[in-house]
Each structure stands twice: as C-alpha cells, then as structure tokens.
Image (tube, rainbow, N blue to C red):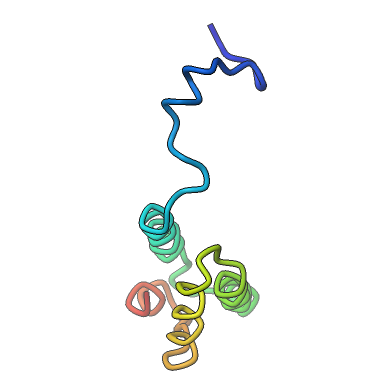
Length: 94
C-alpha cells in the first residue's frame, strides 16, 4: 500500500535519520550535490549558465547551515574563484 503524506507512523519516524543532519552528514551530501552539478555542467556553457553557477556558489556560501563551513567556503572562493569555463574546469576547481 502507498503511504499518504501526513500518514506516518511513529515507528517510521524513529527509524528516519535525524533532522537536521549533523555537520558531517551535511558535508558529505553537500559535496555529493556539488560534484554531481559539476558532472552535469555543460562542456561549453553559455554565459547565462556560467553566471547561474557562480550565483549558486555565492548563495551556497551565504546560506549554508554550518556557519564555520560557510565561512571556509567563502574564503576558499575568494582565494581561488570558481572556474566555470567548462565541465572539466568546474570539476577540477571543486
């Protein structure tokens, strides 16, 4: 049978991962997201696509839930700005 939204048993909640995730879990999943984005980034991105990923990284460094990690990410971007000229460049930068 298919569960309907809002129809979750207490036992189902206890088996679920804690929310919010801890810093290590958040970090692992964040890196998975970033590297997956790079893997699907165009080989020859249009200017709009390059600008969009740069804006995403800026927002990521601002909104990331771990303030220490966000600060480190912003510092790393300031020292070594994202390379968004191609999929390979972005993947190597990450």
